[in-house]
Image 1 (spheres, one colour):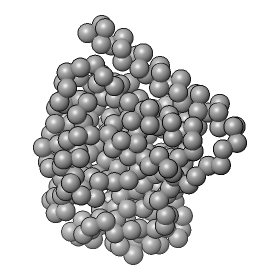
Image 2 (cartoon, helix red, strand yellow):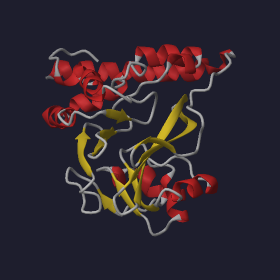
Image 3 (spheres, rainbow, N blue to C red):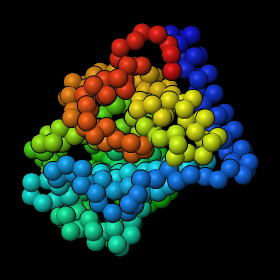
Length: 279
């Protein structure tokens, strides 16, 4: 166990060093391609009662990334905004045409930074968070209002339409998954990344390929806290795979629009089907 933890820490150090190298090399003068997925900042239908909104690009630790919000319409016409992207009156008006904006969801400890603007525009909404988000000093300092914390049990507000669960790891990491039952759509944010290499600047492309963030799997830097989540994290991922979704949506990169069950299983081979210490 000690050797395994040491290997995980070493891998984490390498990932941090790689991001630092990327930040330093950005001044090399390469023309940056556009990593986003236009048309931007407008709802795009994915399947019945589900839309995606592609936004960004955003800057995360010196990396330029596309980002995505998923919208779910419940049977009563209420909308869930999952991992809201940057607020604008134009986007809000387009979303409001789909139903009543009722729920804002921060599905992990990273995807919350745009929610406060949506709260100010729609003060009657309920803000739901992944476990542990309220413990982060940055969140407390921001003044973000968190109304209810999520767990493995769907609340009454959407239990008829969604299943859910939480993958909890080390270092405060947690991420909620949601399955929209009618369409068999699994909704994630960071547990899978599928960036397109040709849409990335050259140095970032190299780093993201090395991190497996272009391979439709969990990026190596996120495998570290998930592995340290132990048997509970592994069981949560197995439960998610057992749902056999038709499609899988996530925040960064090309989504799995077909063959969702098989691609989801392959995405987590590193955790649930191998006993080695690879990252």
